[in-house]
Amino acid sequence: MRNWFPDCRSRFPLAVVAAAAFSLAGCMPYGETVVYRLYQTNADRCTQNETDACVAVLQSSCDAPARVCTDYVPEFQTQASKQLSQKCKTDDEASCRALDAVACDKGDSAVCGRLGEDYAKLYASCKAGNANDCDSLSLSVWPKTQLDIADNACKSGDTIACRVANSSASAMKVNVNKNAQFAMF
Image (cartoon, rainbow, N blue to C red; front, side, top):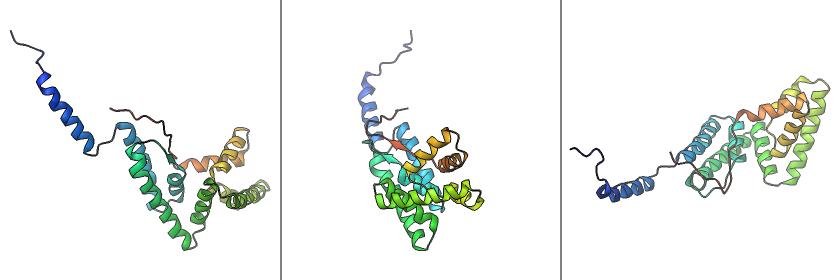
């Protein structure tokens, strides 16, 4: 009678060696691959002069002890910072404001104060009916704290704040904490 369940014990060490070699060859678990793809998409958009994508890369965090966070994310963030800096040097206002937003996110209180004043002026002007300032308000890049305020005001029914909150969501910000565990599929 034929054995339908072959004895695989002799092949087990080979499978372990193959799995170890495969993991050392540069393959990431599925969850890490998803995070990598999100960062890669924003990084690609950033290189195509989409300021919001550059900011998304810089405002994202990846603190897990995983290769995607230790090897790839810092590289994406360095490229995004260089992209914005180069554009800011050519007097691109959106890129300069984006760098300011990132500086504010990193704790620069003077920049945060200036951006807060800019937001308040544009908001008041927009509320008074200035359509150009409404566009400027919603198209500008704002620090996370300002976006959180806009999001909360939007939830309370503030339509101007909703424009700001919704326009900032065009690029996916990725936040991976240090306790993240990535699925293996």
